[in-house]
Amino acid sequence: MKNSPSTYRGRFAPSPSGPLHLGSLVAAVGSYLHAKSHQGKWLVRIEDIDPPREMPGATDIILHTLEQHGLYWDEAIRYQSKQSDLYEYHLELLQKQSVTYYCNCTRKLIQQRGGHYHGYCRDRHLTAEGCSLRFKNLAPINYFTDMLQGNIAADQAFSHEDFILKRKDGLYAYHLAVVSDDTDQQINHIVRGSDLLQPTACQLALYQQLKLPQPQYLHLPVVVTKPGLKLSKQNHAPALDNNRATDNLCTVLSWLNHAPPADIANTDCEHILKWASANWLTSKLPQQIEILKAQG
Image (cartoon, rainbow, N blue to C red; front, side, top):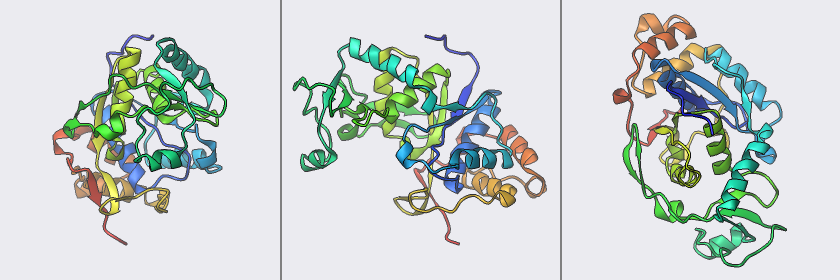
């Protein structure tokens, strides 16, 4: 295991299911500025472990959009699709600790039993064929601290589940992949959207079980078109217009209570981001979970 770095290391980790939109730009800009304001490194990782959900060409579009908005990464891009050896390494560690088991429950069955998974297959001793591999969540996380949102009480119906590590179709699940990659890349600060606030408890359970150094978390508000409806690719959010990059940055910075003065806003992406980095304060960020985007 690598030693924990003394310098700030953050990341932005989009999935290539479509182009970036204003909602994803909030996470990109927030993670970038938090890293740069701490004289840290900002990495980009492409979370391409779910081929059925990916859009051809999306990765190139995402990277081009980041560059057009002045968001340049500090190290080589990492692709999760190339990290299977790393994921298998952590799976083997968990299996040696006897905290995994095979499960053949379908989503439909889980819904019929109340919608949350309560360890139905824990003691059934199933084999791998036709099964997913689950984590035996023996010491679930009930509370954790977020740098912006404060002390968080985990939703125990969610955080106490025995979550999936590897799917029936052989694809690696999100929690395993993200913990493996963040550890391997020595990420010690994670700035992302509040839609991932509750899943944090599951990830912390893996860090705890594997005795890995835990990162600090900061969950920014997500942009919604109406309460509870996140601006997202699934909800057909419009792709960012790279010809309006400075306007896009200023919009996002305004949402994050860091609107640049007019003389800065009328320059270019480089100057806007430089100003924002120099003036970035966590205490100024909005603490709510959602930001309501005006229509139009």
